[in-house]
Every structure is written in structure tokens, then in C-alpha cells.
Length: 182
Image (cartoon, rainbow, N blue to C red):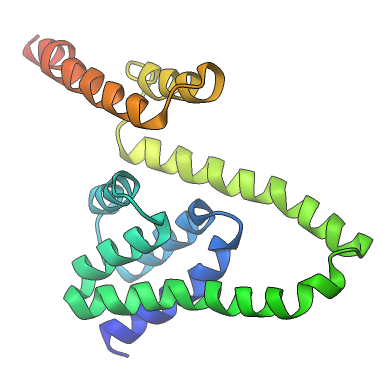
């Protein structure tokens, strides 16, 4: 199987997980990347960080970035098509049938039950990304403060990202460089 087809099929399979949240597909994509030996952990973390930083839909940004690294422009197109198709099919199905079934208690219970699973997948993705990004006890304060600033204080995520970038720069420049010089 050629690389473009393989990328399409991989992102098509993981694209079904993005229905609740784009981040829900992250563990499956990481597993596929590792299984196929497409990228190193640091390259994967770089693609994830870039996809998060870019405006637009996270899953499409991630698919485009990984696809480009693995298979060039054709790989990028294949990965984006694979990611997009499940959402398109899901919307067609939902638009066609959901209005008839949304009042059923079983459907409501299913949707309520899916939420904790998505939270667990998001927590796993954050844990893995944090480990691969080098988050440890000495620098854990940065993501914790960002979470507090957005969730509890209500600051704009844009401002928090800019402030965290500046704080990370200061940390790397002054504190981390002092640790390395000892």
C-alpha cells in the first residue's frame, strides 16, 4: 500500500474519534504514527503544537502537518481527506436520522455516557503530550497557571498563550540556562 493511501486510511479510521472532540483522536493518531514509524515522538509533539497554534480546526491542521511530513503535499491532502470524510458522513447521518431519534431515552443516555470517555481520552492525550514536551515538576506551574487563568479567571486563551510563551522564553533563557551551567 502506498504512503498516501495508508495516510488516508489511518486518518479515516481516527477521524471517527473526532466526533466528540478533535483531541479525542490524538491517542489513536499517536499510536498509528508509532506503529508505522512515521515520526519521532518529538516530531509528533511538534506537529501537535503547531496544529494547536494555527487558527482553524485542530484535527485538520494536525492531519495536514503530519501528512506533509510523511508524504509531502499528496500526503497532506490524503490525511486531510481521511480526517474530513468521517465528519461529513456523520453529519449526513445525523441530519437524516437524528431528529427522529433525539427524544429517545436510550440516545440521550448514550450521549451522556460518551462524555466521560471523551474526558478520559483528552486527559490521556494531555498526559502524553506533556511527557513528550518535557513537562516535569520543575516547570509544571506553567500549564497549571494557564489552565487556572482560562478556566477560573476567565482570561482570553489568546492572552494566556502569549503570556505562557513569554514566560516559557524567560524560563528557558534564565532559569533553565542557569541549571545547565551548574
